[in-house]
Image (cartoon, rainbow, N blue to C red; front, side, top):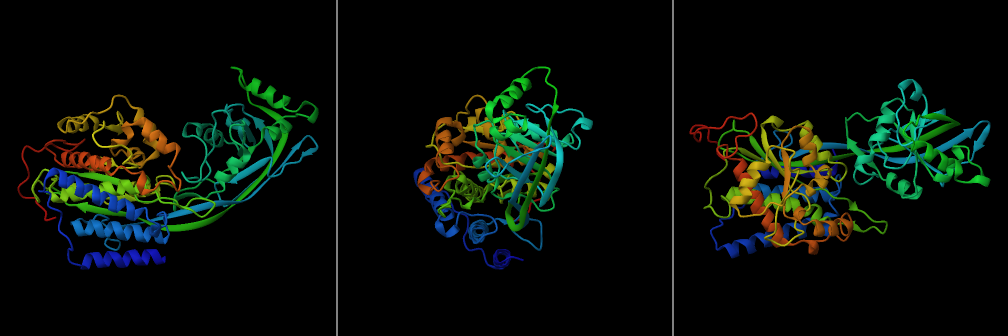
Length: 535
C-alpha cells in the first residue's frame, strides 16, 4: 500500500473514532449575512485546495492525500457518514489506474525494392499496449476512412487522410490525448475492421511535433480494464507523398492526386505498392488513488437516492518550467460547491430552521478522482457503486463554476438527454431563475463526469450559471483553463454562492419522492412513518 493510502486509511480511522467536532451551521441570520458567510466559506475552500501546498491535486501524489484529508474532515464535521459501503475502506473508495507512456517509436517503409528513409521528423508511432510490432505489412490507402471488407483489410496497414479523422484508439486521457471526439470513429472502424495498424497523414493543421508532444504524455485507464494492443502512426505530408510514389522532382503531386481520388463518391480503397514496419513500446506505471464518498442518510431507505458529484483532481505540475496547475475553477470550485450544498442540506437549507425537512431519500456526495485523465473516477464509481445504480433517481455534477456574477440565467448541460428537465424547470421557476433556451451547453456534455453516469443509465446533468454565459465560459476555456493561470482570483464567489443555492434546492426537491417519483419508483401517498433512520 502506498504512503498516501496509509495516510488516508489512518485518517478514516480517526474520523470514525473522533467525536463530532462541529455541528451544522444554523442559518437563521439575515440573508445578507448568510450570503457573506457562504461566500467566505467558498473562498476558503478554493484558496485552500488551489494552494501550492496541495501541489495541483494530481492523483497518487501527496496532493491527493492533502485534498482528501481536507474534504473528508469537512464532510465528517458537518455530519455526513461514509458512503463507500466498504467496511475496510470507509470514506475512501480505492481506484487503481494504469498509465502508459510512449518510449520507443520506430518505422521503416519500402516501395517496390526501394527503402524509404524515415526518422522522427517524418513519422511518430504509438501503441496502446506495452509493445507492438507490425512487420512488412502492405499499405492500403483508405482515403477519408472508407472501410473495405475484412478480407481486404486483414493483415494490412490503412493509410488514412487526416481530414476530420482524428486518432485515437490508443490509451489516452484528457491530459494526454489529441484530436476531436467526433473524429475518433474512422480509426476505430479501421482497427475493428481488421487493419493491423492505421497511419494518419497529417493535413498541416497540426504538425508531427504537436502530435508527438501530446501523445508522449502518459495515457491512463482503470486497472483491470481490457486494453487493446493497437498501433497507430502519424506521418508528415512529405512522407505520405513518398509512400504514394511521389518524387523530389514532382513533390506533393502524388499526395494531391490521392486526396482528389479520395474525394470522389465512388472511391475504393487500393494498395499503393508500399509496405510498412512499425514498432512502438510504452512504459507502464500504476497509480493507486481514491474516490471520496459521503452520505446523508434519508428517512426512507427504499425511496432511492440523489447523487451529488464533483471531481477533486487536477494535473499537478503542468508546465515545462515546473509550474503547478492549481485548478481553482477546474475544479476546486466544484468540490467547494458540493461541500456547501451538503452543509445546507444538513442544516435544513438557507430558508429553513436547523434540522427541519431532512431528506426522505439518501443523498450521496461523491468527489471523483481521475476526471482529467478521462472521467476515470466516475467510471470506477459506476462499475463498482456503493448502491444499485438503478436506485439513483437523479445525479447533479458540478464542474468549473464561479465564472459569472450572481443573478444570471441558468443552463443545463445534458438538456434533453434525461427525464430530469421538467422538474428542474419547476424548481428554477419557484426560485424565479431564468433557464436559457436551447442546448448550447450540451457542447460540454462529454467532457464531464455526468457523461459516464449517463452511459450507465443514471439520469445525470449539470445545472450551472457559468454554462449559461457562453462568452465568459469561452474566454476561460481559451485562457486560464488547464494552465497555471487557473488561480483563486479567477473565481466569482458570489456567483458560486448562487450555484450552491440552486443546487441545494434541486437536491432537496429530487430527494423528496412526493415532488419527484423517479423512474420506476412509486410515488408515496404520504411520508413513511416507520422507516426513519438517525442521520
